Length: 343
Image (cartoon, rainbow, N blue to C red; front, side):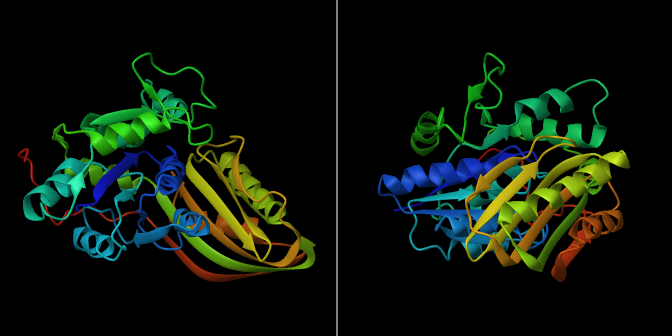
């Protein structure tokens, strides 16, 4: 039996991982085998760590989006243990998925998957910002491109944003609002998928992605006094937020995951000065050793992001050892396949 492939797109911070985890929990509870496939421009992903922490079978594609790592996508998807449903999350700056992922799968590998409608998630506040006059043209271009090719558009974080467009579908990974209805639609739909072809300028697309600096970092922290994961994550996130705000540099997405032997905490923001969304074990016991994962995307030079993170990681009560670090601007997208005709 073909597994159902559910691609969940959306701009940075739209809530893709949260929705996939909530959906996977529902599917697992109903007896279905489910796998989750994460994606990023570099390794040491907070999202992948969250998936593993929740006990789901997972895979990870790094070094580019699914379109540019299509062969890796196929290989990773083949390593799952006969899933009924495979939930896959492309990079948050990625677009043109219908032409570069869905149609190549339909035409070249029709036996591999039954493909669900392409869902694009939208954070209502981010939509208001990026669709407004005067929005950053690069970020607005990426956001509008994602919306233009969606089979289904869903407004996320309904628990935080009670008002969404009247024709918008509302979802909340926290309360479960709209989740069962969305799952039913994507898992049972017989409509054609990937119907919309973007009239996309790849030079402009490359410039838009390269406007963001990316930083993925993993570190080990040994403190002189015992601290909870939350007591490590909070000050680090606040320091980076305040430093970039002082420099008038816009945050697109900032995620911090801190793990110790007693538990983990993840904190994230999607704009400067935002109240962090926090998940995990806030009651975890204090510990003297912690692992830190930091994923930062901002409209800033990647070298500066390294400096800002270093200041936040400088702990007077302990020692931080960087285990790995990747700071860069995304390379121009070069899809392995691009099929513009509807299959």
